[in-house]
Length: 447
Image (tube, rainbow, N blue to C red; front, top):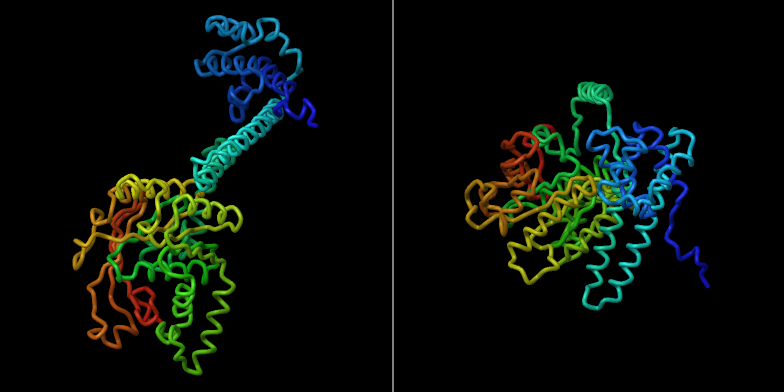
């Protein structure tokens, strides 16, 4: 049988009193304490009232002490609820100095986190017994609350301008020494990376195109450069193609063997060594493929969190946005897409990594340069995205395409239509249908 102590939520009244006493001894310590403490993080209701009054005095620019604090509580009718003058005066007897204020505050903070974990666990248990709530919704809600606690546990602090200047100069010197260095994760398309400096943390990137223009080929070309060549941990969510189709495309891109020959098995003897080398490189790549058609938004977010936490994934690709299933199927589709778009932007910020999402554009964009208004289903995609780029080229019938075109590449425009923190522009690239990959425009010159 559990003891009474086991049923009492975690708390440390001595640390709470010591923290408040230290603040009354040294008002300058309030600036240190508020990095960790809020009124609700105190277990004792009396101590909550006292710290709330301390914060009010601090925010009003009043230098607090016993007299001003007692008067503040009295004026707000909270003095008796805070324990009265005798209790408040006794707080300064619990400590001799404010030197350990940060230590006391961290103890109070830690106990508050433990109480929150118990509360969240109880809520999850209650929701789990509620048959009207879907299990995936319960799981998503639990993960969200736990991640909010994780963010809460990251105590923010200021950085001096001197330190920032030093760091900035160091970064500039590094960029000068290595002309190919980017602040983000480079896509492998040189002219695009010059405009964006790579995919940036916490950004939602949209790659749009009409069907059969090469959205998936573009994403996999970037994945090949990022994960296979540069060993950056990457996740690829495929909601349309199977994982076997994806690996076949990656083998064609990496080996330089025609994808049709790989798919049908009509290989030359000389192809096998290339194929084996390519397979070895792909095998060693930190790449995780999630092959789930009709994936729900809650499941996608949950899987992304796990990949980030357990595998240290640095960038996520999603193929593609309109195949993600919303939990709320009763609202119009454009509202569902708006919800998904906002959620993906929130996910990028939460995980602190780039999230690259493929999207179809409207039928009206056929045979013309697409623009932001051509994004399908919802204008919120345009609003939520930090970067939007479009793949554009004239459709070429396979019978009309020359062998030279399919081998060297078909000229394609990559239109950088939106970049929240940088310039826009147009990049010339080549599409090589033989290998279902995109390469830099000067690729054939350096082969």
